[in-house]
Picture 1 (cartoon, protein in one colour):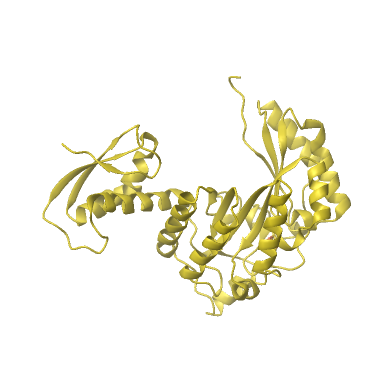
Picture 2: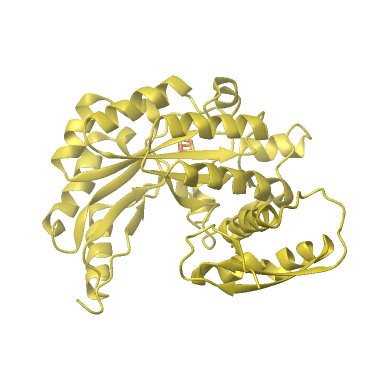
Length: 343
Ligand code: SF4
């Protein structure tokens, strides 16, 4: 029906349920609350009902209700059930089902049975790394094997599996992040989210950074790496539903260092288009400039600005390599495909 909206309704379950504090995490900054006392604030069943009624008033139907932010299956059981029950009257009308995010070590058969009863459709696990050394250094409190075991249980019960990973973690490397991506692909999730680490005020990572023991990724480090990860997941047919922290909330104010940019995904996608344009032209990125040539690059109609790049940086880089390019739309091409127009 015209005017219907299907956007997810997101609610944050703020920090309750976490047995420890990961080095990089300050959920109060992520959700934009002031630090004072906010660690105890989290959503209530009334908040859930109000969010659904507000979405309904705005014409939303068929949305997923998403509980994000903490360790949903680790929270007090009565409280968790009260949140799930608040959604039930709206299942089949405003809401199709529920998705939640949680820790890999808080998944077992018993809790999966319970989630199934309450129409949970998708479960996202914060894996972050598949290297036990990196997990321990970042005080995750779980192992890579916990991710593998929980992923298999979730899929065996017919839930949609989502996995989340980070880049630039304390003690990690680019190769480590690429290995993590390969391991996540092997678990065949439906979706992934990729977050470059940012240093948030009030975290152990901020202390390590101030002590000179942690060097955060810069944007220049993170963009090529995350472009490669995005390509990898895309090639494997896995949807990357988030790349980089959401803008807004308190992130801009609370971010001390690290690879944060409000349009991070677009930067990575532009990098993929540059790589694909160079491949289509038969040029390697470290090639010496050639005598001036012209070329017309073809991409899908929705992808023109990504091919051009922010501040036309892709076209400038191609020009530096000797190719004066213009970009045109070709509706026969798919996302990330680049072709050369033959005159
Ligand atoms: S488990 Fe998640 S929510 Fe809890 S402290 Fe770690 S990153 Fe934060």
